Image (cartoon, rainbow, N blue to C red; front, side, top):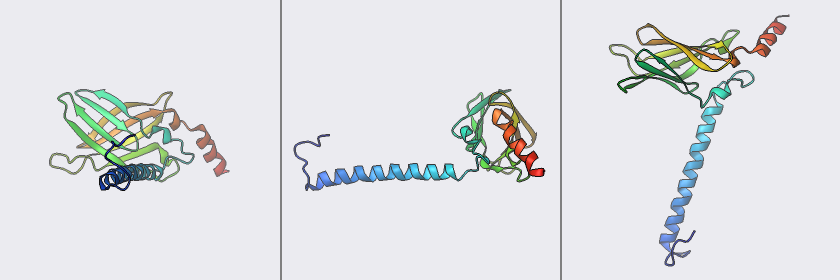
Length: 166
């Protein structure tokens, strides 16, 4: 890593170059730490069983749209014309009741024409593979999706609930 014959320690240009490299490295590390802190702040389930969904994305083509669900991140809708719209960003698990890990809420999507921001509720259902199975819009700019995944089967958690009632 030669800086050239004219740059030597003690030279202000050499020092400025090295300071810039250090500042860039520091900024990169701080960004990585911030990203990890955000990731760790998310509730991935009692035994972190939903963590594997983070960083994944699942697509479903329906009519003239392609829907993309990136769990714990965001949901988008892209038309065949290429226009992409946010249907919401990760918000929370929907139900703080007994089985709180069966619905995800995504909020604050793009504003709807003559309305508020778009939002989506994702219901997790038991299945042999993880895949986005359906998308519906039961009311204006309010979407419902079904994400099938083996982790929603959770026999261990179901057994734990039975034992806690005894």
